[in-house]
View 1: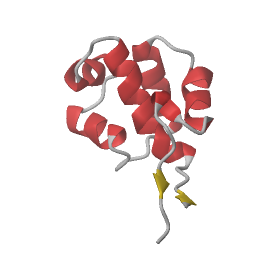
View 2 (view 1 turned 90 degrees about the horizontal axis):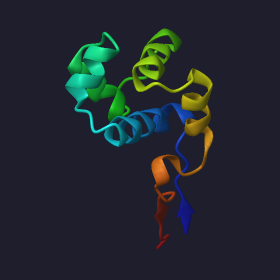
View 3 (view 1 turned 120 degrees about the vertical axis):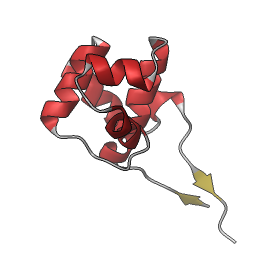
View 4 (view 1 turned 180 degrees about the vertical axis):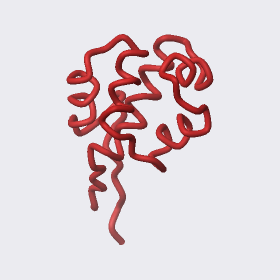
Length: 90
């Protein structure tokens, strides 16, 4: 069995998506509230882009959570309530 470990920077997007959905917001709404481009928002959520600290701060403000809380959620082994990815070794 192999455990696939995701780095905090890779979990950031999943955390953002979970918080956005908990507010009932679209990517467009969050992007507008954070003064970001909607397509960039999608890249962040899919972990195709790693935001700067300034961008993370904009997202935290828009989501009404402290930046430290946003970052600490990325450090947990199972972000957004998801179980760590497991794969059976053959």
